[in-house]
Length: 538
Image (cartoon, rainbow, N blue to C red; front, side, top):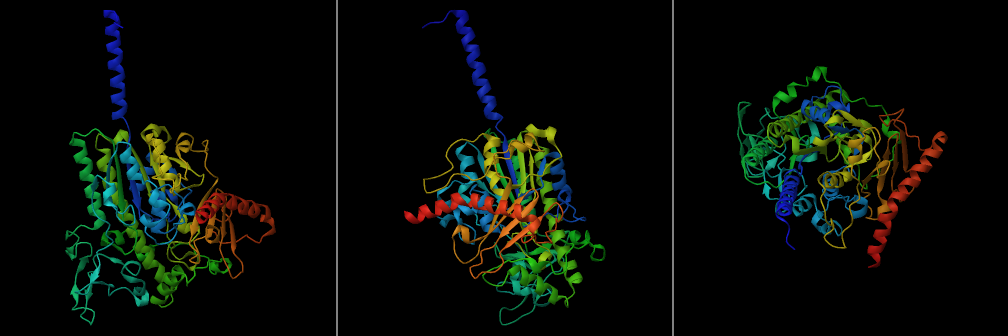
């Protein structure tokens, strides 16, 4: 059918407008910058975990966006936490809560990861540093700096313990057993293990790490990752590709070894450093069972022994190194954010910053991660979304979990398609936090009213035989699997006891509360238990 001349002209105009609008919609698809720190607890200014924490860049991001101050890791140790939030699958669904390889997990190997799904939705994908625990280079269009924890001491043959680590704390190895300034250049004497060596060493490329002083040294891995991200943003800005990007930047610190330049140690003088408030005997009404002796308890006891049994002196040195590492990582965040904010991408990029889990600093005689207490599960979680600048500086107290990260990004970007590779996978477990960007004080949230965390019992993979925790707005409930019997529950009232000092599990005044928490945990576990039973019946 032919159109009149005027009608044809109008049709062409409308067609042009449609094509133009579609093109603009394509251009306006938001970019994603995901920043993941390693082992960062609530020692961040806006979270209030330590009164002297210097984190100006993370706090600035929180003031520009929405900060979720009750966010929790679903499994407070690196491998299962990252396997969970990069797939959106809760560890209770995947039974991935130990130290296996994500690519061998019978559920996760059939689920799409964030970069896979982003690529399917037309996004360029870039990464640098540690995002997955084990790098998966084929998932990204461009890979930056490989994960590297060092530099390390070296004995002439292999990396070794730093000779200045006090006492027997070096028992915990080159990672967990090291907390020292980069300025303390290791001088490893000759021994049967090696000819000896003076200087730091890069494990990843097996080369010396050049260090003379702060003005004449090699860049540390996190510094290299930050610079890679800065340069990538600059290249994207001058490039001709119009596809949006999904970029992840994973910083290693404050993961051990707690080795950073001296200037960050100088920001926390030992004589004025405030220590975490630790209640004597706090562990007596807790019932953690590890299968072996708890690493966190052993690390704490060994640290004290290394300083002659003086907890003040021991923690002062360790907390100083941790805070120095936190501030170092914060400065790396600042470098990336400065590059983004100076680019044309600033107003069309959603920034999310979080950590894989927290870390204890001696609370409950524990110096490690992978507990079910607040110090281990609580993490920073910040979203800066250009569409919600009017909510800048808002704080969300409703509990969320890291498993909510992937579905949130899907919602932010309107990604489409199946997230399962096959029926052997599982649908995403989490929920989008977008309602809280719209109403920080109480959005219409489809998700649960508590965050679920899991810790392996090391006895079996059965879901209902793991150590589990629920953290609601007001309470934390913990249930341990204790096949030999004994007390196995903890309950803390965060309205009165934010330090989780008093276990109320047997307090008759809390009978109704603990009954409700038990019921809620059973309800949350039911689908995973049914799924596990179904897999057994195949």
